Image (cartoon, rainbow, N blue to C red; front, side, top):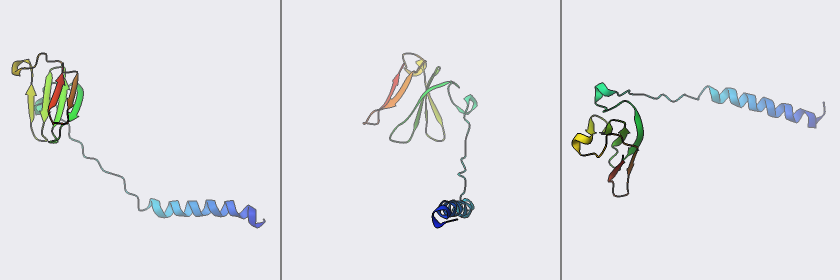
Length: 103
């Protein structure tokens, strides 16, 4: 073998050695999930839209109204609390941190 034909073999061996060295140090990310349902205070289990406001509260639009989740408790908004309809198709927050709900 001449020097030119040995170079690709050397590169492959260096690549494989590097992969062996660095894969031992790689750690997978661990995600923690929490499952929330109607029993936890969610107004309805079918979610249409999600939005987060500037206070880091999650606004949830569902077929049964809207919910606000502060990380601990759900607050429900329905026709009984002033929404024109229980179906909420869109949830958004404007720059002034005012949440918007579109039936």
